[in-house]
Structures are given as structure tokens and as C-alpha cells.
Length: 394
Ligand code: FUB
Image (cartoon, rainbow, N blue to C red; front, side):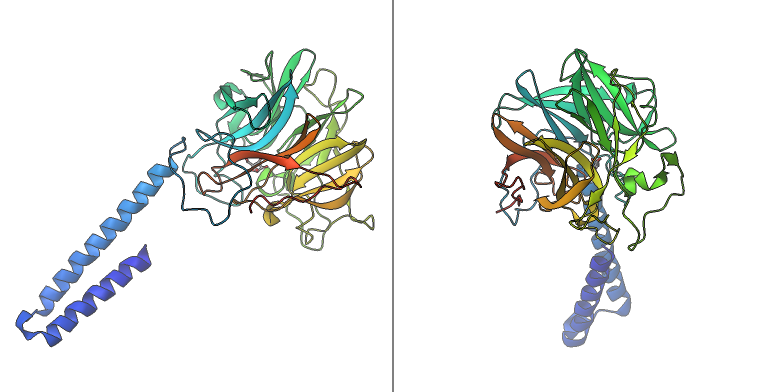
């Protein structure tokens, strides 16, 4: 804006001075020149401020209002819903239907920063559909931040599970001291409404819970996220508010796992780190940031093997690693989903009627990193069990 004003003043002054010089009939005095320059400046400043106000108003609307500039690339799939912004889709099949547990992105006008303050979500809406490609139902508000007794701000990526004839919604939110923990809420229906427990899950921390049910009926929670997800503040399950991110040559921070107890509202064991190894059985360092874990843990099983997928955050890939135990170690395999439009990338992988799908998000509707839209596309395996990498644009 400042540059536009300077240019406007410069151009106006140049034109007026030239007119003074070459068209004597106009006979502008220095005072008149300054006066006209002032008027032009005022008009420029007014119009720039007016534009900024308009942008801010648009950003504060929660509903999808307009398409951005035409996309450069053609997306391979379309947003599942367009009336609200949704992200971080965790998909499950309950009672023969596909349920998606996404974040509900909101435009609160919070300034963007590396802590993700602009992801300032206030509630969850659950989506469902009978089949892939079928009509999508938004079941309305399933849980509101104001009904979570311990919550401060920022309801981030949730997940859900069914056990004990109850549906459990797991969600990360900052407590009143601005520290992320993972909470749980229950319902008799997969779409909610959910009732939150009074306190976070004991021993839980950071973000992005994924709750995986193994074939033997045991449930495991995978979680964690660095940077704004605060995982760097937790070493040996102890909180250090001054905990630092790793230097490039240091071992990368590892995601976490814990088995859930039978009540599904607590851990059955201390939280453990998960090892993601390269082909030579070495852990990644922070400088391997196109491969190391950042956030968005997801676990699925294929042909008896455990597939741990995750986002690399600042390099924007969804990668995966395979292991033979729910605790790992997992051996790095490669990319599942190449970077999408928008800073974040977050997936879930689900089998539906003998086909596999990846649920993910991008920013097709808004063009803004914190106002995302969930999508789904088919995921294919090679004969050796590796995943065929997906690019979300043609
Ligand atoms: O939606 C907020 C955060 O952005 C999620 O928790 C991360 O996985 C990233 O998608």
C-alpha cells in the first residue's frame, strides 16, 4: 500500500510539473502544484485503506463467500462441502456409513504466524456420506469450545472411535495456559452431539490424535506435532515451556503413541516415542525435513502391516513408513501425497468396499491457508504393498 501511495504522489507531481513547464497557459503556481499533489495523495491513501478494510471484513466471514482467482492447476477432486471451511479429515466407517471428523476452519482475523494462531477454530461439525461420491451431510455443531471446561483456544485436528457402545471424539485444544493437550468427548451417535470430559486425557500433550483399532480390538492413540503443535516442549513426557526445536544436525523429534485403556478416556501405559527409520535403520535428523515427522499422524493396516503416515509440515509432503507392530519401528517408504495448495497437508486413509481412499484438504475455495476444504481421492497400492504417490492437481 505504501509503495502505491509513493508511486501515485511521484506520478502526479511529475505530470503537474511537466504541465507547468510545457503548457504556459496553465501557469500553475508552486502552491497549486502542492495542493493538487496533496489531494491526489489523500485520494490514494483513502482508497488503499478502504481496500484493506474490505479484505479484513471478508476474512472475518465464517461462510464460504467467493471463489479466489482462477486456479492455475486443475484439482483431481472437488471440496466435499462448500458451505463451511473444513480441514484435517479423519474418516471412519460406522454403521455402514462414512463419517468424516474434520477441523472446522474459521475466519477470525487472527494474524498468521509460525505458531498457527490463525488456525483459531471454535467447534466441530461432523460430515457423513453413504458412499464415496455420494451426497455429503453436515450434522451441524457436534462440540463447541465453550462446552469444553478446560479449553482455552484453538480446536485442532480431531479423530473418533467406537467402543463400549459409545462414540468417542478425541480433540486437541490449548488449555487456559495456552498449552495443547488432548481431550475426549462422548456421544451415543457418531455425529454427536458430544459431551466433553472435565479434564484432558491424563498424560496427553501436543496435537493431532489418531485413534487406531487393531485387529485384536486394542486401541492406540498416535499424536504429536512440532512448531505450533508444541511437541518440542515435551521430552520424556515432561513439559518444558522453553523446549526448543531441533538444530539441523540433531535427531528429529519423534511422534508419540500410547495404548488406550478399556474405558477409552485414558492411556493404559506411559506415552512412547515412535521410531521412523531410513532404509539403513537410521533415525532422520532435522535437516531431513522432507522426510521427518512434523504432524498429522495416521495409522492404517494393509495386508497385515502397519502403515504410519504423517505430514512433513514445512516441506508439505504426506509421507509413510511401514512396520510390523503398532509401536513401530517403521521404515520410511516415500510420499503418499505431494504438497497441496495451502501451507498444511493432512490426511486419513480408509478402505471402503475393497477400494482405498485418502481424505485430505487444500485451499481451493478460499486461497487462504487457514480456510481449507476437505476432499477425497482414490489411493492405490503397488503389488509389493508400496503406495502410488498422489499429486492432487493435473
Ligand atoms: O488444523 C490445524 C492444524 O493444521 C492441524 O492440527 C495440523 O495437522 C494442520 O493441518
